[in-house]
Amino acid sequence: MPDPRLKKVSRDQLPPDLQVLWDNAMRDRDEATLIEVAGNAPEVLDWYYNSFYAQMFHGGRIDIRIKQLARMKLSTMHGCAFCNRGNSKAALADGVTQAQLDALFDPDNAVFDARERAVLELCEEMTLANMDGYMNGPLYQALSEHFDDGEIFELGVCLAVLVGMAKFLFVFDLVSREDNCPISLPDQDAAE
Image (tube, rainbow, N blue to C red; front, side, top):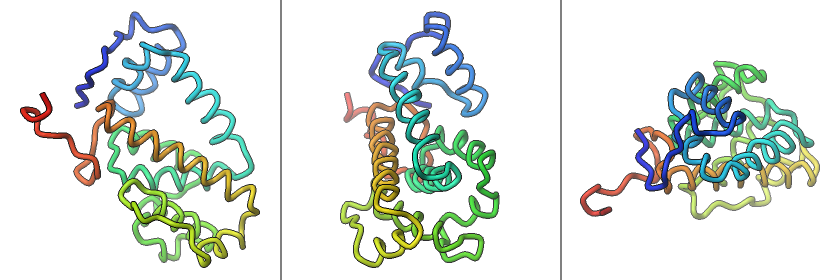
């Protein structure tokens, strides 16, 4: 369970809009530490949900199903238990199939088309663990067969925000991790 250094704001002390997010987090993700800590700066969480998610992730040029597939690939590679619990429900609701979720680490699987494979390959380049990530010529070619440069740029920004947010969530210990999380908690005795 997360144990952040930043003060948590109890649900009853959160503004009404964050109380709704707290309730949703508990329902969909079984924890709400992120929302509790965000109670210290609700305007920041407002930006994340109402600008990034509402305008770019759920809006923008690229269909939501592709973005959900990419988000699931990243959160699965990053080992974010909090993210995976909610992201899988959202991905399924937006048209990603259970077979695709089950095959995220097998991008050559027949459940993915060439467009999806290119996006999954871009996720591999963008992940936290890949410090040598690069969009080389073949990857750009694979992406450009299905997306224009504006769409590729948007997809890159979406993935960058998600990857950066994952790093933040782990460093600030705001979410539960899975065993494969590349950012491990330090030994508690050494961390003090």
